[in-house]
Length: 261
Image: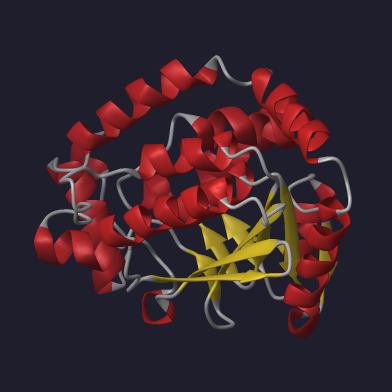
């Protein structure tokens, strides 16, 4: 597959997947999601690969979720070559790949990008990283893995705060609540992530695989809820309420949701 939205490389035993849309703060569209799935599947079947690093191009953002400008301009995020919007498949692929996925968060991990890092097995953040959800501010939500896994990591009260208030949190604040494993200066981020990946590569791949699946088993029941949540979001996304949030984001103003209350 010829990539336009991501970069894919294998260094030693580590696959490095980089969302390469820095002009859009590494937000994703349908093509981006399709390429990320393809890259993860390549890493899955490559026997040389022991670990995956997921990161974003540039110094400003890891990923900021769905491309709101694309949505306002075209009425959607765009689809993959098969005509599907496959973000749910992307989320499940991060969970299902039998190799640890390390999020190397360089800058903003917001909205759907925040959900991606939550889904990753480990998170290493640069000291300028910012974390948070934005769905209710832009007429969107992730009421599947985005709530289920977040609650397991930070606890229910904090998860509700993150979603209900749509605040942004520093790397230090994220580490305090268990969202981040380690913080390093931005210049050292990839070096640190590659070091962790090398440590994993020295361990038994079969043991790692079964450990990952065991960790996943605790939250596997949320799969059904995720299916319903994604279907609900698909229907909600084209309502006037949702579009008010998206238009306000693009126009850089506060949304007015009062008519929908």
